[in-house]
Image 1: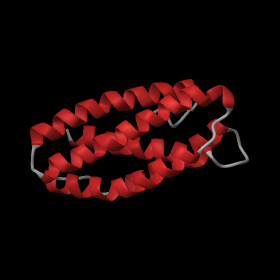
Image 2: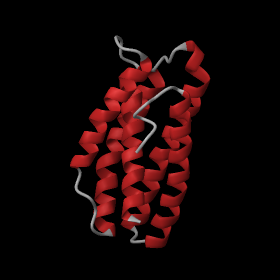
Image 3: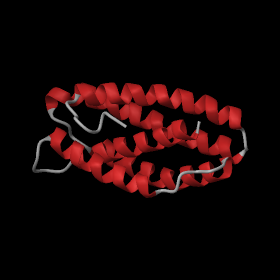
Image 4: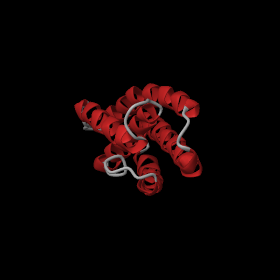
Length: 145
């Protein structure tokens, strides 16, 4: 279960990374996204893995402010016109993943292991949808976790 929750948190960071880099100039949209995913994967790997439900709440608490900043930046991005519809759907999935992390945090704070597990399973499905959309956008790294 911890691995599932950690993978959801990593997925949220990967989506965050895609968003931040996608708005930058220079390399192609997909190359920028893959580069930032590598960066954020490294950062999320530095977080200590939770060993109990209280640690999980703390980890989610550390993650949420970064996701909030990403959501603001995501709303300001301009994807290539031919990718707009898929990018908009991908952004909606990002917001679902962010909400999943918040709910996991809240359930962990309440020491509701069953609730954490339920949300983590839903988050896995939301992550799979985000990965599918990432593949459709042409990502090579950001659609995997």
